[in-house]
Image (cartoon, rainbow, N blue to C red; front, side, top):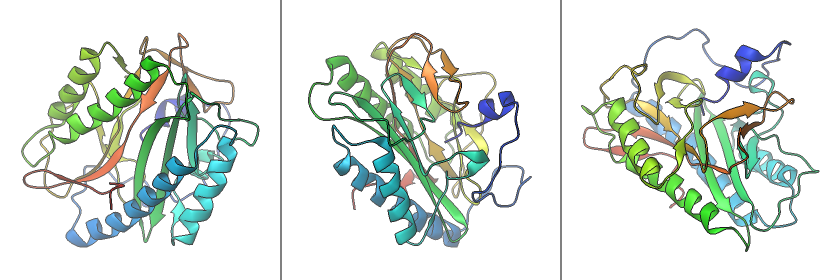
Amino acid sequence: MNLFADLLATTKTPVLETGPRIQKGRRGVEIKSAREIATMRQASRIVATVLRELLELAAPGMTTGDLDTHAEKRIRELGATPSFKGYHGFPASICASINNEVVHGIPSSKRVIQAGDLLKIDTGAYFDGYHGDSCVSLCVGQGASEEAQTLCRVAQESLMRGLAQIKAGNTLLDIAGAVQDHVEAHGFAVVEDYTGHGVGRNLHEEPSVFNFRTRDLPNMKLRSGMTLAVEPILNAGSKACRTLKDRWTVVTADGSWSAQWEHTIAVGSDGCEILTDRDF
């Protein structure tokens, strides 16, 4: 999740980095070896396992703090370290964002999940020197509006449209265009403030993986061995967002609801491997 840059640029007080931050200052796009991808596959399998459990656990009456407690316990039991906890001072192992919260929602024992809520759960695991990163959205229990259900579905579909464009020789703009076209065809807005990213030894690496066409994105060709976190974020209303006083939680400017899906993938010669695939 390449979701911290804008926040850090506006933070007035220092933040403590206690989480895994490896090899600071590395530049350029890294091509991973088969051995490195095998390790990332293990890290990503842990993420997928935990998210699958959280999808089953999430229910009306639970708190986002309950989900975070379970996630940290399970990530550690599976031999990994939570990627998010301590990362630039983030206090939890998951981001739990509800309804109009776009990203970076801080889990809390006081935040009770209600029937019909649109919940986004984003988490990462750091295993043997490498990260996996993934996010899911779900409408909790009964009573979600038709718009919320459609928003959640289109967000997942847009991710898969983007992933379908990934193979060696295609470009980052192929991904961006596929995502943008699917989102806008359904009347929703792509959030432009946050993007996907490379992932590997660091949680955030080059390149940025945009979800919309832009001249700011070099039309970089994809190469086998690239590992990316692709993560469309879309709003039911305006794309505009703002950050709350806690300096983490990002919400829609107009109060509309938001959805996000993310997978960590490895680029191959004729497609991609979804490393955080939960169907195993």
